Image (cartoon, rainbow, N blue to C red; front, side, top):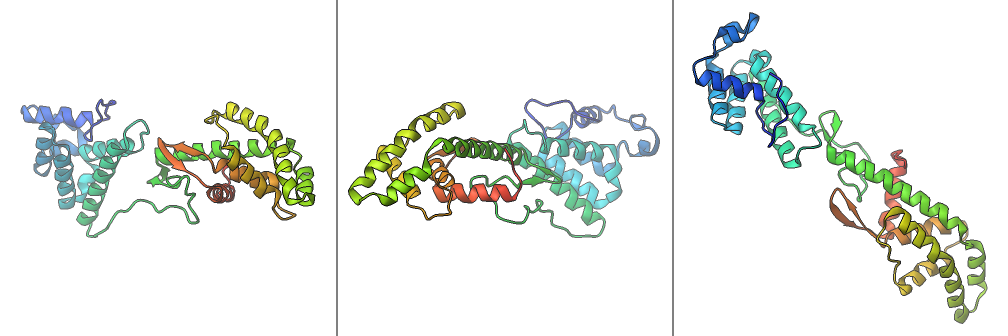
Length: 288
């Protein structure tokens, strides 16, 4: 009763559809299910499921099968129920299918599970697996989303994007080693107010080729921040207290100028968001 790939995808497995057509045509008999289920080939409680399947009414068919499981939970081992559950389970986890369809498949699984539990004498409410404890990165809000024991395709995509994000950050910090931060910071502190702008200009002249090459290598928009904003970023970095890493601080400021497209969604950032995201991903052990 395994089903072949559907186009468009369907909630009902191909095998069940074929049996439903045979049943509707009066050609389904005990020979179809040899052994233990021979007497159940035309189970009275499963006829509404077959009828809805034959008419292409997927949600109604799922509801009818759920009713049959609530009436007799041992039907969970019937080939129809087995085929239906396996079909839904693998459909939910197929990353090539639209999220809207996977949500429908998830709802169908929940319906069948809750109905089976009712048949067993329990009333349960099935919920999506809770996200892991700890802060969820705002830039990657779906990174902890799960379906059953596995991450959703959206979570997997965000984890991959998070890894690329870490790679970009680390590469930027490594390239910023070329800038004479200590020299510029000492000159900035020693300069009179009127001369500080010259120190900032020297630092920017070193930064521009580094940032332009980074943008080319990583496919970034390729537009440096406006001169005024770049001057403000450098001024903030040169004015930080001793003991703080100017390269990391500038990386937060610089990356906070970009909107990152993650999972097809454009997500604006700020320096503080970049900083918190880097630290949160590091605590989770996500690497480039």
